Amino acid sequence: MESVSRPGFGGAVWRRSSYSNQEGGNCVEVADGLPGVVAVRDSKVSGSPVVVVPAGSWRVFVGGVRVDRRF
Image (cartoon, rainbow, N blue to C red; front, side):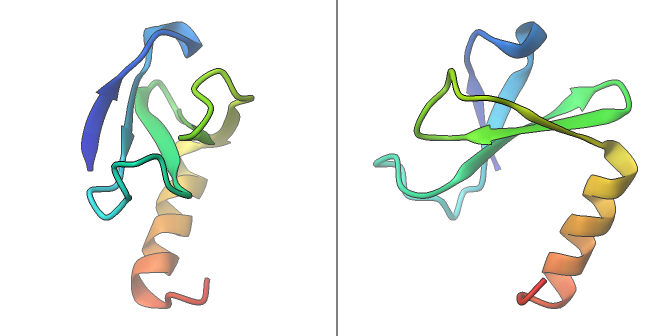
């Protein structure tokens, strides 16, 4: 994933997948350096609302996506 440094959510460093379109396509950004949580937002709107999930739940989700793309 590519690091994207933007102001907002507590100085978090946002990143998006290297598979995402660099022209602002349909993608999400994540900030996973936060204690115990992962923040997720719309990559097209840096000031968009942030969804915060427990880090353990995020790991389960990502693991499921890697194994079964229909997750």
